[in-house]
Image (tube, rainbow, N blue to C red; front, top):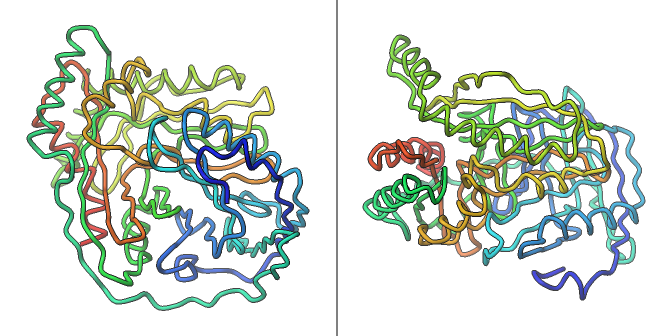
Length: 422
């Protein structure tokens, strides 16, 4: 195990043996996941789930993603890989989740399971991974689906940031913006609770996956959620991203729902917030890409509980950047930090009374060739080994922001996690 801050001292390359074979259709991945420590990346029934742990790499500090990219290249280069499937998610894969802040006390991790089960476009596979020098035998047989554990419900209540405290911090942020100190800042608040002993986290993940099928439902090292925002996808030299910023609640009927989407599309406040986010992604990708394409105007993305302004970005890599290199270049985007980035992050550190941990950081997976899929860890909660749960939600603050409306937006964004646990 490589602990935070000890990468330089422990630079031994692990020699892994990896074998991927095609299997009969795996109709549902979630029942195969570990009930208490699930590793999962799922959207519309396709994705990967990991079992066991062959290797765990931990990182911290300002260079956490760069260190991960460097060490992952070494691990992948030293691995003996047999992959008859050759699809995104087959072969050697690590699940990853990274802390939002450089100063976070929460470690960032890459987890390489002992076994990975995958499904994509009707093709299913099993990957077995062992450390060559460990003497450990590969997991022999594929796991069987197991019934979900007993039902449970927990309440999540305000944590370090109270409702009044959040509104006061939004007002303070608006003052700083009007004064010209920063253009936009994203502020969040937290809710906390506690799981009963033996709680089956697959129940929460199943609720998220069924309720938000077009989002990335994920679980990595206790961070669980369902994110609508793709930070970056890298595949065969192509790079794509989806930028979300600007939000409104869904209407109660078809007419009010249409009006809500139109109002969002025509909102100067939301359009300004969105353009900050798009520009930050374009600026970060340009050194690595050619022919970056975006739509001229954002479109409205419909989720079960709200509307988002969204812009898709596409480009072609012009260097050998991996998906880990690109999340390092992109994070944090203006959608989760603000603009200018350094000033916004400093203001977040000043106003938010908690460590975000991995909330709003990159979460996803990376393959041996550096390709991968990464989302921004939104609509999320961190589950600790002792059962403590902390959920987060935030919103972009600009000069026109009103504290009461921003509080209402966080309530909308908490809904997926609150419903899943309740």
